[in-house]
Length: 132
Image (cartoon, rainbow, N blue to C red; front, top):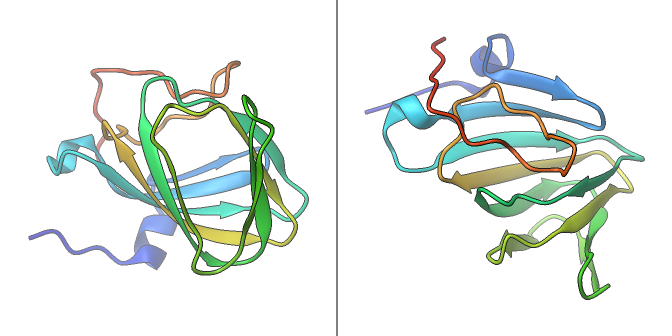
């Protein structure tokens, strides 16, 4: 059984800070669950273009307000507490935070923990692992 506290993880190497967001990686590759689980904060005013070419992601909004735009179709979907979206086709998207948003995110394959977006908005695949 794995039990972790969000605040403890925030104060460790499991917290990754980047432009417009931070992510606390609660479950990672080395936890051997087959997915990673993150609590991510999207900052107010953020506009993040992303394209997870190597991962599938599902996101649930716990607080805040924003929108997600499908770059291919131009469709825009509002995000508010209770909204879930899944990037099931490696969808290139733009995420906008109108307010600070707290999001629960799942990635498959799981992240190792230190990833940030590359120039194309993706996380690289890697065989490395990190520890607390």
